[in-house]
Image (tube, rainbow, N blue to C red; front, side, top):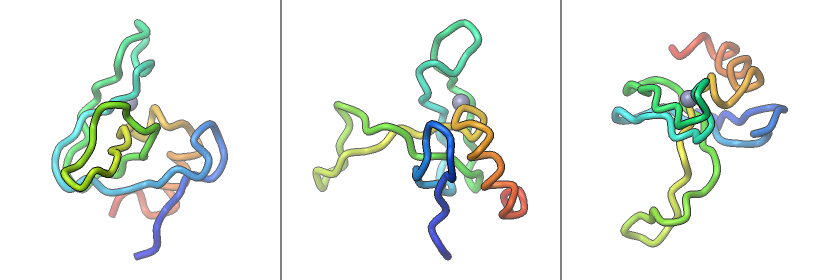
Length: 88
Ligand SMILES: [Zn+2]
């Protein structure tokens, strides 16, 4: 499987991955009220890797990136995912 990346937009070059377990969108300006998006990202759905979080690290010491739902990642991310058949 080739690695998908966002082509264009504010997250140009960001990795698009499939969720292995349930996540929630961590985009901090994702809601209309200006708060966190928190939209569920179900297992098997695509999400976009966003900015690196400051405080989260794996046990190996690698930094974890925020996970954004495709809607928050922008139309370019949605278009890239749609090219894959919409998540199949
Ligand atoms: Zn979102």
